[in-house]
Image (tube, rainbow, N blue to C red):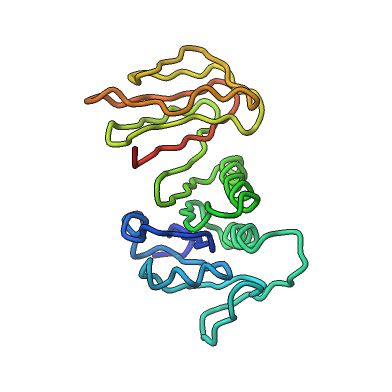
Length: 213
């Protein structure tokens, strides 16, 4: 399989407690990039990196034959942002990001906004953690959510979003508007036996599917 046709799995250093749950999303043919202390998740995720990136200020640089890009400690990009840029340079169109959310709110927010960057470039991307799937819904796209999820939430993090429609959910919307300073589309539920449908006409939304109630 051509490298650029594979999905890119980027492993960050945020905590992962339920490795079994996260492993469920990993494919055997994923191209794996470990970012600095994301290397600590190798055993738990049962993966080996194809590429290692980082400044190694939080994890000892391994002695390995795996391709390694050593970054300066003082730089504009985080290790994860650099890894995404490098994967884009290598031509990847689909991304799974794990080890992205956790104790550091600054890093968590920075990593969530990676989804916006990738969405604007027309790439497919998702963050998975111990509890949730997080992805971006671009303008005009309809996303379906089945009733296997405990909750789902829509969050406007890139300005006003209008023409928001939610169907077959406990709390439905029709041509609604969501602004960053008033987030009211949180903790919705799919009607049992139904598949909820979410769509925006103007602007993009962050979709969070919660797997645990």
